[in-house]
Length: 95
Image 1: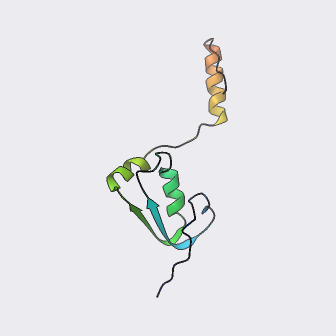
Image 2: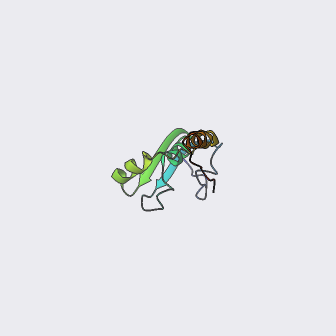
Image 3: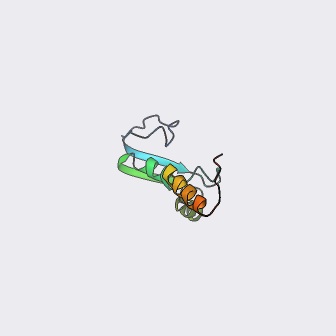
């Protein structure tokens, strides 16, 4: 009989760098919108070496949430925007 390793308190962020034979991921779509996205899914599911299963309350809603782009802007992008705005006589102010 297969056994479970206790990992009920492992978050997707703390699981980075870990590998497990099987991974069970709970993706509840009614949590804060920024918690469920493609990066979260990738990190969670890619920890499995053999089998990964996703459990959700709403598969249709989950598909939309996983397609959200959560890329961060790079400092280079800000620098390019600043150069372009200065050429147009505008000023960008960092907050």
